[in-house]
Amino acid sequence: MLTRPAQTAEVKDRPFNNLLRRLNNADFALIEPHLTTFHAHPGDLLYNPGSAVETVYFPCGPGLVSYLVPNEDGRDVETILVGREGAVGGIVSQGYLPAYTRICVKFGGPFVRLPIGKLEAAKSESRSLRNIFARYADCMLAQIFQSTACNAIHSIEQRTAKWIVSAMERTDGSDAVPLTHEQLATLLGVGRSYTSRVIQTFKAEGIVQTRRGAILVRDLDALQTRACLCNESVKHHFEEVLRGVYPTEEAGT
Ligand SMILES: [Zn+2]
Image (cartoon, rainbow, N blue to C red; front, side, top):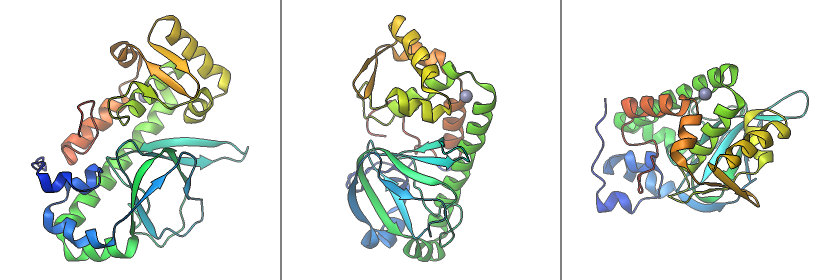
């Protein structure tokens, strides 16, 4: 098990991505000259199926991306969300292979990009850097396994509550989650009427309110009791494998 590193002032000067902040100073110095920051907007497309993967993207702060699997009926279904606990692009493959999924920005914010070749060069120089990325790949696979099980057995209500809580963990203490009914329906792979019905129930119980383009969480405890435990299982694995990297409700992590 890795121990949580002290959040020194130096680490806090880095981009607000927990994986980048998890690296020791020597490892961060290997990639720092190659990092570039840009601002991403909701709907921005990072990869399409078949695109050559040449860049790793690190969502920072409230930035969040989703992996979407296109289906034969024209619908995209979301599989997992990745926020500042991780990165997308060449995490498992080491890059230069075609992307399997579409990767799309869900919540805008600052993002950092790094050419895959620079990351691979740093990995070949540093065992500890390679170890952090291998551990992250393991955690990302755990998210995918859990998501598969979740979609198979948990109810639409449980999954709706889970996604709202999971998105809220990245909104930096705000209780407004910028998700529409439409987006929730895509996350769940169900028709919009199903999610609308669940949201109406949550509203009637005082758990959430809605406003244009966002869901306001009024009773987080109640929402958490409605959610399945899938998020918790994934967080537990992150804590075992990459302590301190999964965002929590505590500010600044
Ligand atoms: Zn679940």
